[in-house]
Amino acid sequence: MSAVELKIGDAAALLGVATHVLRHWEDIGLLTPRRLPSGHRLYDDQTIGQARLIQISQRAGLSLAEIGELVAGERVDRIGLINAKRNRIAEHIANLELADRFLAHLVRCVHPVISDCPECSALVERGARLAITQ
Image (tube, rainbow, N blue to C red; front, top):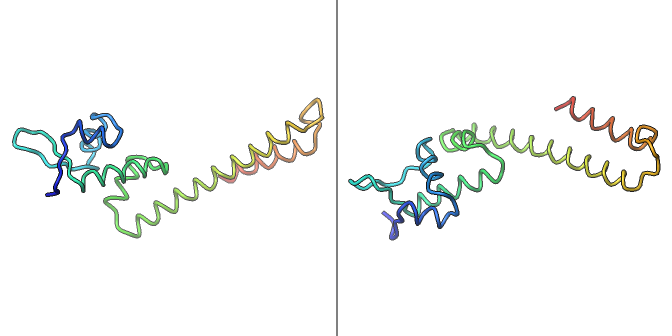
């Protein structure tokens, strides 16, 4: 047992989430706070750490199901899941970079009709190829 155990409201405030979020994470098996005989939940340092791992994983774009797989899976499975997520992020970054180049060009483009501009057409074609390969 850790030196400090927080009730659900205090743990939620510390983590910046609503109490129902912590209950949901518990319901789906991502958190296991200690329970008092009365049924009240107590969150120790380890459980708070698990909740922070869930939060940072969500910010990295992982779904709760994927986080569950990370927690429960073998190392090789975790690596595969992480690499697949990183590949999707890289594809998303490539799409955003292309969109940014296209918009930057539109600011400079002097053609009254976008389809008349060779650079616009090339960027649109590149975007179409990216979409097909994904």
